[in-house]
Image (cartoon, rainbow, N blue to C red):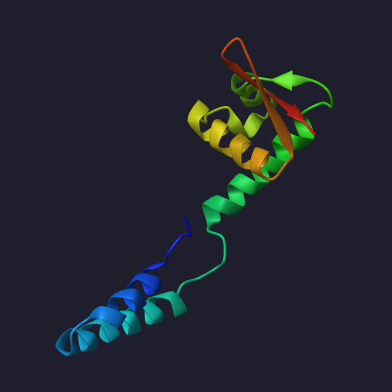
Length: 114
């Protein structure tokens, strides 16, 4: 199944809409275009900070050694006050970037530097 955007939905509805509804749909489409044009593509300050933390995690990990989230948290001083959910989110992003691999052993997740 293809993923449709709001604009795709509006275009589909526009094809079957009555004449009095078409003006409303075109107005909504114009508002959506205006909103999308003003959107910033720069990363937020928090995203930049998390990327820096991800680099610190990667540098602290040793090749061939597996780590749990708690062990990763202990490796990096910047994560001393962070909760496990934040560490897990950062490591999951690293996994999507193919910087670490994830392995389940007896129901516990272990991450290894690639």
